[in-house]
Length: 356
Image 1 (spheres, rainbow, N blue to C red):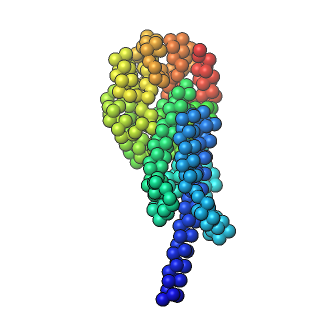
Image 2 (image 1 turned 180 degrees about the vertical axis):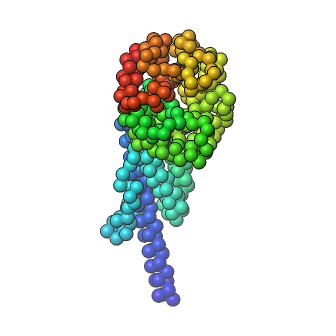
Image 3 (image 1 turned 90 degrees about the horizontal axis):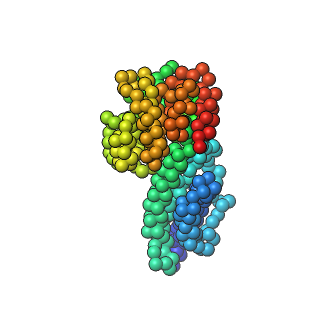
């Protein structure tokens, strides 16, 4: 009997130490991931509110990282210290870095939530319950941060490239990105969905590699399928409210407008930006009358969200559009049919940055 009691006691002690080691490792993992996210909020975004949320979560986790849990650490005896994955060796851009660390924190909190149910220090709240609440807070933080990141880049973007279906699509887009383009819309009306899906994935990867936003024209389902940064809607597409319900607040929704009534309706319904045009007649919008520079002037005086003049804009009329009040423009042929898209991109951006 005494031997059985001793064995049971030994098993219990071993289980307890194992649980403590699991808690220790995942408390470290969650806090490290939060610190990486916090540093970007602080230094990359200069956002004190998001930084403060990260810091608060780290401190709350630290309060659970007790001496008895730390004492169970056995780094030399941990077989996981040598495990790695090729994807951990590099990050394509800041977005992938942030997403990887959000996943890291969320997974660690899920482990802490479950194994924390076996840990019962003298606290008013159980660790499992506390970590469950923190996990949901991290989900909200991720949504807010990724949304803030996208909208910040949108506000900083002055040139918007809308693609047209050409053979060297990827080459033109990459050359434009190399010239400093930070906002791209994939627009292709007639291709099969399988083709559009394949091209959208390649374009998304290119954009994110260069730190640019990737928007899908019209198709909310395709935007969701490829995890695009947002969607651009026409007047005959899904209502903005429906798109927002499907996409959430963290993704961008743009809307084409041709007159003051459409502008006001798009703003009221929650568009993040609007297209203003067509300023000039363009084969991209065949048969559609030009909205003209008067509409550009109207929008410049009455629109509080980002907006892009679009339609037939090129190097010969850019100054006229800017003089009408445009600080941002969207182009198609000026880049898609350019012999030197990198230089053309640099030219447009340099001119637009001269706008006072």
